Length: 138
Image 1: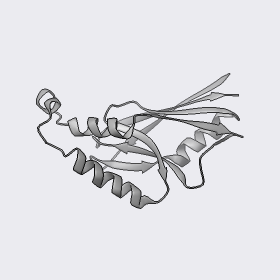
Image 2: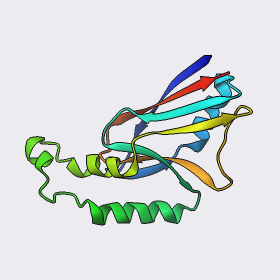
Image 3: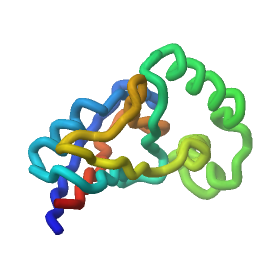
């Protein structure tokens, strides 16, 4: 079995940003030369997430608004009292979104549905963060 590993680096301008990373991951699948297998996309931080959703960007705005209501910043979280960064909401939002995804690779491409896209969600940004792509297969 072949493996391919790549780190994508992000430095978001905003504390919370959701970025479409489909093209970058598809590029790594092509570069890997793996035709059939799996692609693991794994943020290396506990205040960020990756997820698959529809290509309609209004859903990105809806998710951002929903998470802001469910997990407001500065709501008296115990973690904020223990950690001076005050980023408990970022960690909790990442937990709710799901930390990583594993996607099928078929015929040398990500095997996504017609309207599916892969997104990186950053909830404690404005600093360097990385996402690991690990592609396994033949």
